[in-house]
Length: 157
Ligand SMILES: [Zn+2]
Image (cartoon, rainbow, N blue to C red; front, side, top):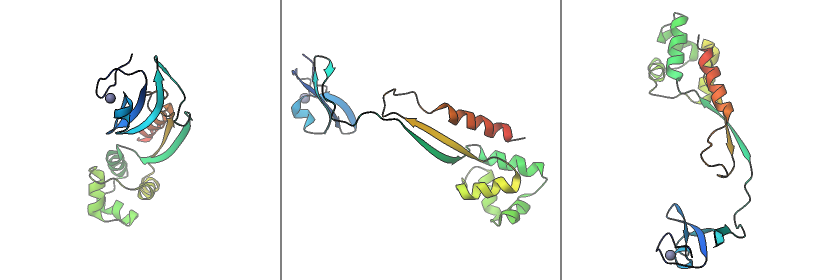
């Protein structure tokens, strides 16, 4: 007979429940303290799934590249622009541009795109996440994220 992961009691049927943020296989009493995800668990086999079946969904997002400060700085230097010139082109405060180049402030997407146009750099990368509700937990993000990231790095020169 399995043991409740919460109180250690030996029981015939365990329930998988989320208790205080942790997912545990527990007895009825302990399951009542949390939110039951699956039930019942008998002899090492899960019975009827009460959760929705795993479905694949792809989340596509756009994100400002992590190394945005250096990308902007390098592109600006290449053009032999000072920060003042860049801030004039972007209609932005000079102090803001200093902070962005230093990586202290991350530009939002629309501003990042304006910088892209002004300097001819790639700052916005596409983030694609394949979610499968933990079916293959730990597999992490899809390959496209990495490919796009590499592309961003190559554009730098
Ligand atoms: Zn228990």
